[in-house]
Length: 197
Image 1 (tube, one colour):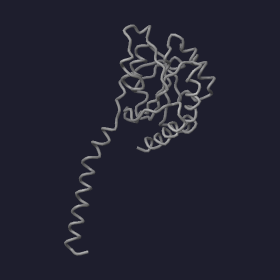
Image 2 (cartoon, one colour):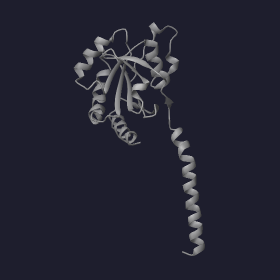
Image 3 (cartoon, one colour):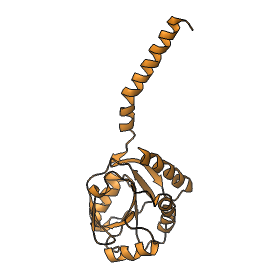
Image 4 (cartoon, rainbow, N blue to C red):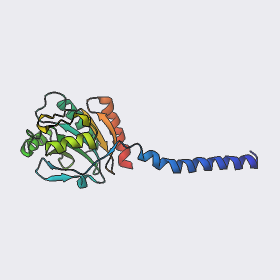
């Protein structure tokens, strides 16, 4: 390689590095689906859990209800795989929100959580106002379409198998289908990547 060719090569390598440094923050900002808005819900122990409690954590958000005989048992069986993979990871959480707060009171969630035999400091079961829970699902986590919001909250019902992966900065990075084994495996891989960041 001549001196001239070496200079050209160095110049183009420099341009590529500069291009990467300029564009990579823009790319990382734009692979965000949504930002999690402030929230406050009661956990299975009757303690308030807010967005401040999950700051700096990677977490998965899902919706279920304790009396569900349809998709929920399969979903939470799959969520158990996620829990088992990260149960010793201090920077990881699961937030399981009820979609039937009129049924899933704090004592009902406590009984359900106890039956799951999990660490409820890491896999947290949440209840609260129905409109607030549903708004989080549709606007913050984007796991259900906001057009499904009905005029009367009493008539509204949310039942979704989709999970939201939230990074340490409170940004939803990807949505996964909690009924598909391949997506659960992909979620586990992505959680590992997010935890390293």
